[in-house]
Length: 110
Image 1 (tube, rainbow, N blue to C red):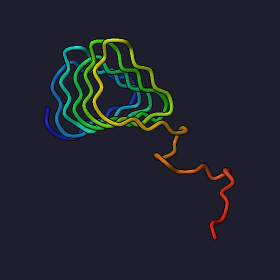
Image 2 (image 1 turned 120 degrees about the horizontal axis):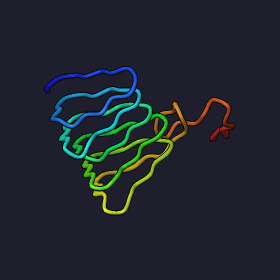
Image 3 (image 1 turned 30 degrees about the horizontal axis):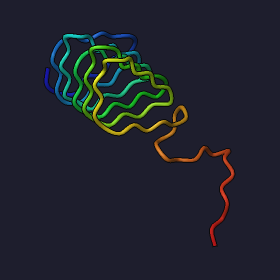
């Protein structure tokens, strides 16, 4: 499938996707080949992903996953045997990378 896919509720993919992928709870199966920007709340990867992954709640990379791209999540687990090439950004739920929460005190610079 080529294009933008958006799912509500849990979904498991075991095919080829190129483009953009959005799902609340997503499992990328061992047979999956994903070349896309992936966004979701809870994401489990067992297959191959080339592209950035943004998980607002939890990202799990399970053997034999291969991820080439940057990942952003507030909760990350990587099993032994997983291949990951890219940068990782850990952040609080619902925040973008490098942003302070609105309740955080920030000193003024002079």
